[in-house]
Image (cartoon, rainbow over all chains, first blue to last red; front, top):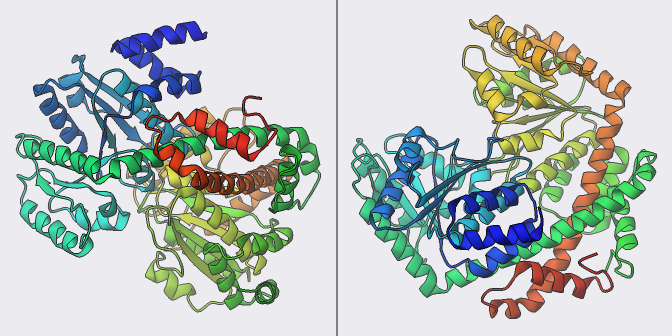
Length: 318
Length: 318
């Protein structure tokens, strides 16, 4: 695809053209002119914050995202949603989304839903997810929601992209203990006890508050606990407000700036990593036969040899 | 810790001293003189193949590993076991292992069990796992078993360390479909239908065989399906034989050599990655203030500037 065509797509993206948005996402996911596209987009974006929604399977994350989206829509806000399933190899469209969500928002042009799986390694999906969120921002979707299907290590890593992490738990399921075990308590900025019409919701809130008493001592932000019901819509206004409060806190405390710089560091490192990997791979291919015949080659020694071959004058041991 | 002391530990490791084995593992996990230690060890190891055991939670992986270990012990073979739980932050000892396993093998000096969690990122645990397996080999444990708790993306990535991957499924649970969804069918070298005394075992075997008819056409290795019962011990001899057959196949077909070279490439790249990251981080720290004041810094531009600063004469765009 030539650069002229990409520039056209980019202009249309910035004019909030939905099809251009979808097309740009596909190009970036397929790594076609990714660097060029993302340079244009990153210059214009990064203002909108990302709300991550995570929690154990069955906690009702999708329904909550759906209800929250409805709430934003009632305030005329445009919503971009990225749903990530690190255990699925499938990407594209909204195949992971539940039917309800598609029925509700499938025809709403002010809601954009994108599902991502992991083709290849996790670092790849984390990066693509960050890219897609910024593309959605560029396309005029100012409320950015990021949802994961589970709470494994992969999901935690993906959640680092978010500015505000909402952890959704289910009353009466032992979710609390599971969540502590999985390490998601540490990343929560807001807790949601969903399906609050079920028995055990208050008890779960108390349990979380007690745990916060222990862990939040002296911290500037204590995660609020919100009871919601995606079915009745109860608690959504409160959740909406807590998200806004947290984002105001991020701005005032300077945390937002620290996040921004941390992400700049990470993205810069990724450029380095790509560059170093490309250099490594071409050298490796060029010298492959040597290693094929070395039965017990020492990777440390091989690394040093290749490094000094590539970066002449840059000594490995210095 | 000084090098002399480490050399002493290494000699004791090679003499199959159990305490030295445990100590060396701790040092490598804590990244104390890791490079020095692993260089010594990698020179002497890599001959023994790793059998990976994976499958959905509840499929009976731990019991199967336990039964297989008993079988190896009955043939006087020494067994090293690494159990990995990517969702747990805990490492060390055998805390993940079930009580039964500890009761059976806890006092057997010819069995070494090590549990690993993920502190930090997944790449780290994959690497540590590979290291620990080689340390166990150096310590004279010649049957190397690698077990994961689940079958998420993280577990699949860890399984790449294995030469032979055994996928354990449970009859009558819909495990087959889950496994296809999670992408574990592609990595299986051997299928085990465990708890074969339960109804549905034969049907599950047929389902797997049918799927293999579709996917293995023209492939040199067709994964055998073994029915086992960890309780009665049925099928273990057959599993033992299939593992040996697969390993003989790897050697004869040249696959083993390709694995070895692929791992050398990966480990060599990791050295590069560490080196590049260290270079990047020191440069980033040195120039941090500049980026803090650049509101909309372009990571691509920053990466280029830092790269050309570090690797003088190595142009970014070439």
